[in-house]
Length: 230
Image 1 (cartoon, rainbow, N blue to C red):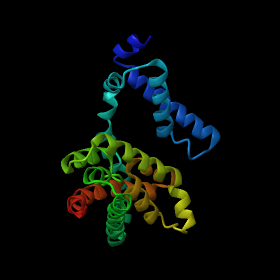
Image 2 (image 1 turned 60 degrees about the vertical axis):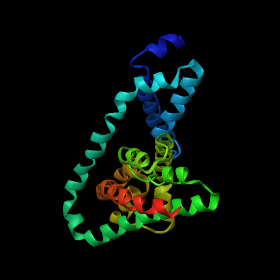
Image 3 (image 1 turned 180 degrees about the vertical axis):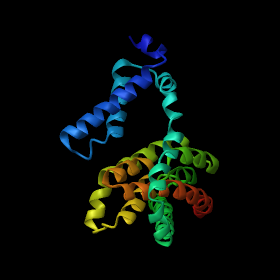
Image 4 (image 1 turned 180 degrees about the horizontal axis):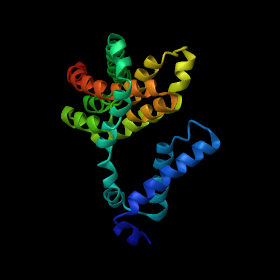
């Protein structure tokens, strides 16, 4: 069985799709934020790989076509932004300052935690892109001399945490303004957080979509400065 699965060109894609579909079903059925479809699909894929003894490299290669959809999927987030363009113009200054605050909070928190736990420079720069979309984060990690595979894992974990607890944090601090909520999700948890913002409303989704692109660019600039701090 393992030999057949290792040689299959579609095994990885099939497992990822089934795992994600299972996650969507469980979340709708049980109404638990922790049952994020992406998190469920990751756990499902790990279990399948372990149980059937599939080589990870073969699995990754057979699921590689899904990675090609990442960039166009991110670009498609511009649609809700275009639909709420008038709101962007109305709150332009607040939006720009909000994204800047989110970017520097992300970079600053990584610097602080790295100094606190005594991380070396390689792991420090690996964590700097944690809050931006994978498409940008991988390239930034490589350029700074980090470890891209760890960067991807950290980006996914950050996104899932934002998706799961972001709404509760906004409620805890009484953040109700749709623009502010959207900016918080986009700057802290990129596309995965944006999927949650879209559930909360069109304005939240549009602002979060904007934050992904702008915070990604600002993080590239900011990380090149922060990399010299440790």
